[in-house]
Length: 111
Image 1 (cartoon, rainbow, N blue to C red):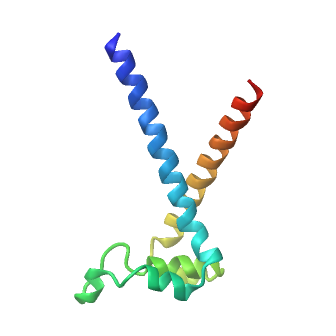
Image 2 (cartoon, rainbow, N blue to C red):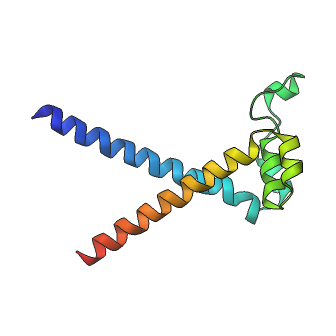
């Protein structure tokens, strides 16, 4: 049936998107642990909203992630109120996608 094929392809597409987002989540969580804060600040320019004298919901997130990786949770909360939650969600997503990938590789290797 065409609907079954479409459903299978859609499910596969969602899985691929989730794995890509999981990888990007790992980069976002891991970057402050391996790169210097100076390097990260150079990679991510000042937010356009902040440059205009305003702010957006992601303003201060780079600073907050650097502070979280250094164990400064209070400073991270001050930099961006939602930083700890976002960092946690990204970390869990990365671990879940990594675990799924490892499971699939092991399953494929043993079959």
